[in-house]
Image (cartoon, rainbow, N blue to C red; front, side, top):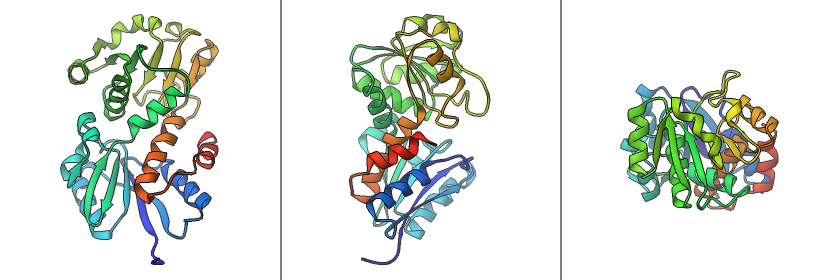
Length: 269
């Protein structure tokens, strides 16, 4: 075994709050392979994305986790994109296979596994707020599992386009009063990340619902706090982060991820 560590990276803009490096490094340590793998992060401005992808090849970076705002744009610079990521229209994972860059999407797995720990998704009415990269992955996973999905988005054009693509419903943000009747509510926007705001009026939440916020920092967003006050079950953003990272871990290392140790760490982010 070469004594050179294989490097994995998170790229995004901004990137400073990404917890992926710590999460993966905890996994390497738990398996005793921290001398073989190291996980770092790099801030990549949108205008430098193409150059960064060339750098991944040039430097022999093994794997790259792709965060906002690059998940859709990066696809055009890769050698291959797997079928699921193509359908989703977003890549959050790049594997460097001897100089060939292959794009995958593990976000949908993260969302589905986190939700299925609480309920069976088949036939459930699900409201998804947002129509960005995370939303695309979540909607793909939900429809694959037989849920009845309706997307709510500020930009009508973007929301309708996504709904048409995945054959589900669309409603404008102003029509959200109806979500009181939904089994599951998912916030796939960044509302609540840097402020004490929620994309949903508290009075629309109730104890029979499952409320999932993709934001993992802060762990207790305003939406999560209010859902708990109403007696709803909640799915934290760190759970999606964890389970998508577990899939990435396999792709980067070829090994099963130490889920227990990674979960222990993710819970306390």
